[in-house]
Picture 1 (tube, rainbow, N blue to C red):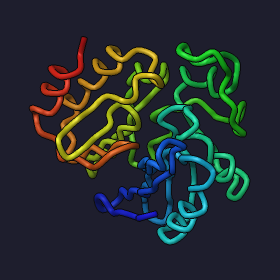
Picture 2: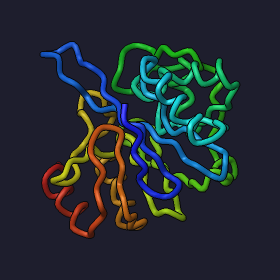
Picture 3: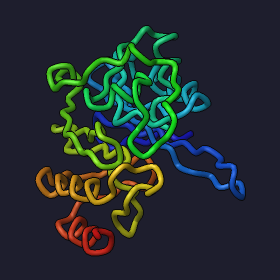
Length: 223
């Protein structure tokens, strides 16, 4: 685990999980947002990553809430540990709750999601996010209620799985885990509206924004 300070108030917890295929190490990034002594967690990764996240958060301040980009297991699985240890509230977009709560499978799945925070995740609003310095944008496609978070003061976008990022640019999320790839790609147009200084994704490297990023992405990947 590496704790990387992206900006004055935004930290990335850089971790890896080992996939059961040729011992591949897959990056799983989560974020800590600092506002004074208050710390807000964006995504939690899987169970095994949370202990190090907690140590990092405690080194910066006092954890206050968890915000989720969406409800897939590599983003939500560890959330119950934050609830158990700190009694934190958890928030996700309203459109994601039916899947998080196990009331329906994701549209591209034939099984219900299993997690330990079903029915306690609350609807996300900008009013709730206000104290953290974040705002959110709905970016459906990877999942119906996927969101990205924008730290306006530091001008950083936390992309979740809207993109996989590399030094070469933007790439789409894994298709088999995405509901509608073209909708996901169209949702990415928001980065040209926001024009962030930094794009940080759940599974990739941090990128500095420039106007050609999204144009190239659409050219390469949009059907």
